[in-house]
Image (cartoon, rainbow, N blue to C red):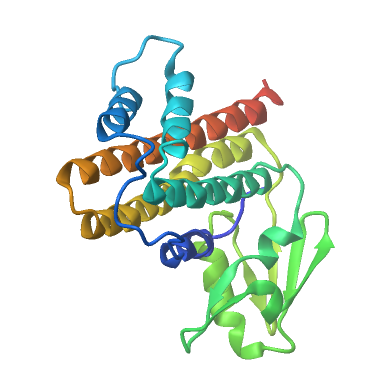
Length: 253
């Protein structure tokens, strides 16, 4: 089942931009030299790999970064791992062939006053029929317009209909066209949001490292490791989406 709108996922992912850095030291750990770090990062960033070795390179990027004994890289990879977990959860809901009410409950609605609230806090989400979701806004009638807009902007590809204080959402049948739509939208929306979030983590720690690390060689080594980790997580995300796309389409092959 397709999931949340772009803003919902972005807000969850982008929340990590303000996460604190545990260690405030401005130098690299003495247990690993600059030359060692460069050797790690340069090998992980190799752009040309033999056919069949791409997955190994991806894991090398991440593993090397995680074991660099570099506080900036260590904290960045922790945040990237959390983003990856959220991506996998999002994809599980997105590719579900059954209606999951949580998909609608978790949509983030931006009200007229600028406040953000999950749909489940504004209206009561229920399943009216096997092909119809109903959201009742009896307790928050003024939120219905913003809620309808949030649904329309989501990646659910549904057409909400309003009747008074209730929004009805017909859910598409799982046809071949619908499956193809789900497969395509996963990369077009969910992965792009994930990629943007990873990039923000990279930029946050790269900026921090550039400001605090005095030695230029040490900063360059840190930059290379951060970039290697980001690219590694991006590639793993793509592989996960490709695998689930293949599984979804296999059911109608």
